Image (cartoon, protein in one colour):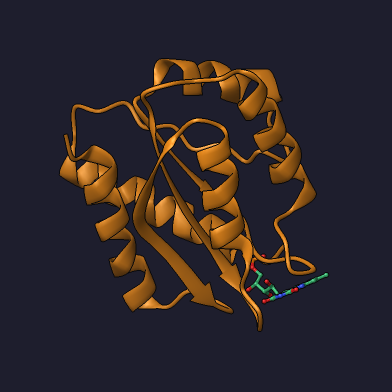
Length: 136
Ligand SMILES: Cc1cc2nc3c(=O)[nH]c(=O)nc-3n(C[C@H](O)[C@H](O)[C@H](O)COP(=O)(O)O)c2cc1C
């Protein structure tokens, strides 16, 4: 909605490029990218990270629809992390983790939930999510 979650995604991308320079890393906006294109990249990947702000005690419907599609494809042996901004109740990260688990992903404990707009310490915290994503 206001790009906080998008900024976290780009911070995660920057940490991953720094920690794993030989790894191919791609960032997508699920709301504006063809869902099949994103799914093709998930098929080729070992790990994904999905972000959504909290909206009406839930996740964005664009992300929810995409996760429904993800579940249908029954991927196995891939890791997933969740992150997102919130204002007061902050359900999005837990909901993302639940849906990623139901879609067959190994859901990482490493995650980050940010109250309103991310600050420098939040961008730094995304490094822990990056480390968990690339760990063997
Ligand atoms: C329509 C709308 C509904 C929202 N509902 C919730 C909510 O139920 N719980 C909550 O914690 N925050 C809620 N928020 C606050 C957002 O999660 C918060 O502004 C967040 O920082 C937005 O992240 P973004 O910058 O990635 O869009 C809502 C915001 C909007 C605009």
